[in-house]
Length: 320
Image (cartoon, rainbow, N blue to C red; front, side, top):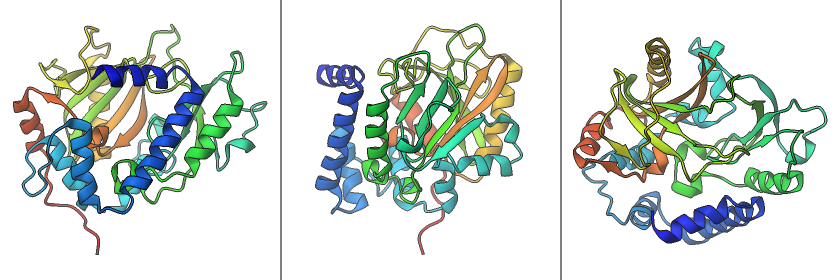
């Protein structure tokens, strides 16, 4: 990451108001510059801007190239349901896994109607149609209610599709979801367990740490280890720096998550299925189809090609 991007990231996470201003500027800039160009042209320009590399869509070979191919061509309606952080619960229940769903306190169309006097505390608040629009409400601590309303109501008016042309977000009805804060009784931090699955086959898992700040926002200091389907640590980096924290899962917990990931990912050529483990209990997190928006840095390059080879881009649902 460049010095400029590091400074920008630190500033972004230092103030709720700066976050709001940056996100407002970003959405306006994207709509102004890119709304009139085709999805394909956007893909090529956006990828070059973010990674500095050219994107080959005619003969996709790398992980990112195949992600962008799926972005531009896969139009399975189930993608929309599973990308919706509210409606995905329907899908998890249909798969017979309602027991791993976190408790939900409420769903709101407007931040101004949330009654913080009756809302359980602590509570995790998030938008269902974006990535990273999160905050934790805890009535024992100061809460920026005014900036929360301003930021979340602004985000409710945005279509996240325009950020990186992920069609699966285009038709989601925006909501604010309130749910229980997951935390270990001993206060130890939660890790994100993210299984990358290919047509229902979990091939590897990302264990991310420090992904959230204390207020629930995305952290710029997140780190990541990669493990194979047998819990073996791989000499692979995937966009984020590695960490030296041992995996705190038992073999049973790992296999339990892997079995759930296989069930939930079965209809999709590629799906990242996320879980948490709280006091030995497994909980569902979310389903992501285009990891990091298709702008990744996988090292060594041989692993980039290997992972890409697991993605079947031929059996997809296209627009009529």
